[in-house]
Image (tube, rainbow, N blue to C red; front, side):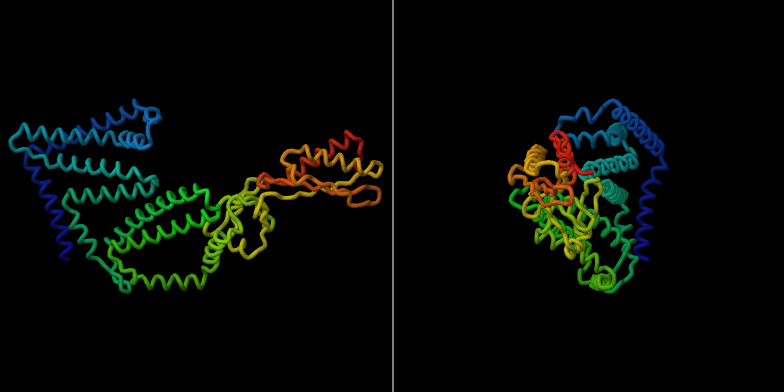
Length: 416
């Protein structure tokens, strides 16, 4: 009840400060001046945005200056409003003996708080986090300017429930939610920064780069959570009840999720597969695009991305076409009528395949005479490529087309 009385008293004080303005002619004067400032600032802000093309003007500017100019353009009307209200209040103080300028002063302070917060929060690219930070910061600033911050905080802190050894209040939940959002965003941004630096290191393998990046990201997120909980006064040991519930959940229904997480760490650590490898598992054939904590993304040649759970890549058979090197051998089998000379057919096949793009010169292609099948000569043409990520079927198709053209030119007949 005491906190509620403090809140009521704070509201009464603010009401008295405003009510005092009603007893004099200064109230309509201040309201008129504020409305005039709003109209003028809105018109000038619209005119500025219409006449000034920020993107073209700052096209070749450094990134920081470009973002600064963009912030000025977005808040130009508020900046004009702030300058007008400050000028109006200074003029009233200079020209009158006992001016009443409380409302104008509050309007100027609110505009100042908005500009400072908007410029500072512009560093945040995530729009949701940006809106939450701007709204929360400006609400706190407005309550502080009006003298209501302490009464409102005391009122929100007075309503509480005890959960285990933890005292929960609306104020604690609001502070924790906002700080967690900011902390997790900061940790994620720092993780992205470190991850980019790690991926630029030529001394680390792709899988090790991903592993280091994910470990650092998880460590930063955990550190952010610990810092936020400690800063709002939550004892970590009081969360033992929740950790026990999480453990029960893992035991009952989250085994697959945990298994995929552990499998993802194993895959990154043992380097059996890595981003860029060409693999085939089951009916899926393609190259690895990303390796996540829960799944691995494999891009197939028809443009689909297959998300394979990490557990399957650990427990099932996986063919890695580029595990230790990118060289792979392809076979094309063909038959001809017995009317020709097999030595000549072999020579034509080798000369033909040597002219097909993407086929390696070393090791050289081979053409083996594999047998007689009724009325045909059977051959097996073997050759190597070192770019399986570009596909294997298209190379075989090119070889078959080249063989067809060569056989037509040399008079070698293919059985019907």
